[in-house]
Each structure stands twice: as C-alpha cells, then as structure tokens.
Length: 91
Image (cartoon, rainbow, N blue to C red; front, side, top):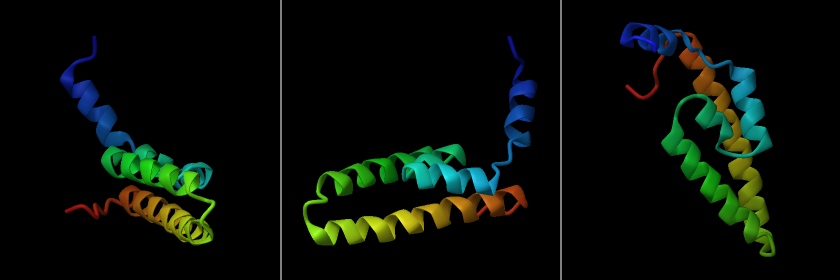
C-alpha cells in the first residue's frame, strides 16, 4: 500500500502536456479538462457537448457547438501549458 508521501509526490509530479489536453478536447469536449485534473469543468463540458450534439437539427446549435468546441480545445491546451510552467490559473 502506498504511503501518503508517495501519493503526494506522484500528484505533485504530474504535469499535463498541452498537446495531449488539446487532443483529448478535440476528440470530445471535456476530456482535455478531465486530463488536466479539472473534473467538474470537464464533466460540465462533456454534458453540454452532448446536449448540443443531440440538438444538431437546429442549424444554430451546430454553429454554437463549433465555437464551443474550438474554445474547449483552446482552454484545455492553455490550462495545461500554464500548469506545466507552474502557473495555477485557479488561484
């Protein structure tokens, strides 16, 4: 069984790679945020993307989804990039 120090060290050492976060968000919105460790935001984006996808029969929803998807990729990439440099945007 791992000690608390080993778990804390493993958590501190994890630095998300920006290209992976962007790729995961490109595959499906929210996955990049979850990869970055932001599970609440990732789950919200995941559900929001699902709702937008099932309402594609409205043309406006398709365009909203495209803008949302691009923003999602940018947000996941920039968060991982700043996190890997030691900048925490949540503080």
